Image (tube, rainbow over all chains, first blue to last red; front, side, top):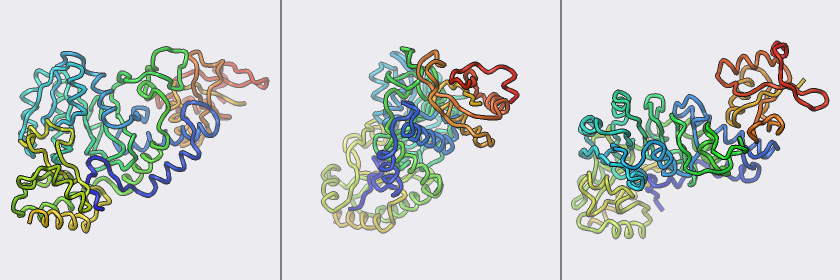
Length: 370
Length: 87
């Protein structure tokens, strides 16, 4: 099996991730729920993960690192904290349903900064043109469909200049590209733990520049007489028992990222992208969505002639290739790129994808086209 | 003498305790005695010496968020006085 669906979930993790999870299951109780050894061990582990994440992303206070179930959970907290029915919210043309659905559900007024694929200048211009009417900006750092790296630091500077709060979706960026919370100056940055951070499913992080409004209410192990959620982070946004084994795995993933360095991971994925593009570019009947190198991360979409993308993915799966097909939960991105009627096939990389595996995948794609 | 520095949250207590440890002051996070918590459950940092220095470190890092108590020999607690902070 060759696994190239890492933009959905990284399957191959550092061995330390599963080990840490098993150790946590065997030795850790629940943080903030007692003073005994097993509870304190859990508290220490959870705090270590907050601290490591804070250092990786430049968050000044580990208390502002909130654990979530996934990026969608974090984005829902962030959006519901800053938008309500009728709030004009400016988003990029490459947002995931994790952004657009909560906004629609709230009844926010959606403004879309539409721009062509891989054109960072046009993307920034679109934000400049439309930000005047916005009370909130939500922007992804990287398109999950096309790997398009949006000019989010420029958009953040624009938001700061206009006094408009910013929510960043770092789902495809965390662990791969620099996510500098201080430099972004964002109200919130949401990310999953199970993609580039190499943790397990069911984990995510919300970096908070604001206090936020709880999506869930319940026990926090603090201020129990109060019938409102505590006013302070992280307790305010972390109702209920933590996913301690998940957080242990996430900590191991983050430690791996920090020891290897996101720059080195990005370089590895860029190398794989170059290989894929050079091998597939001249294949008749194959349409690649590749941009200038600096505008694309380790995610590559393509269409195979007139073949239905889901049928092509099924055939590739029979040959041992795991990739994603369809709209990737991001119809808006497909509308922006003109692929909403067909969807695309998508391969996506991780630190554990080898050149050899990618060559194997490209060979099979070529055979199918022939 | 055992001292307790009350904290607004577990994370706050962990941050405070680690900071003190890094400055060479032995400290540990403990569940705060129920009688000292007006709002219900909570955590504190416990230490046995260098209270004044610890309080000053936490103050300057904006981590001093609760009252400071000393534990009497009979197990009861009393709020630390200015004199205690010089210890």
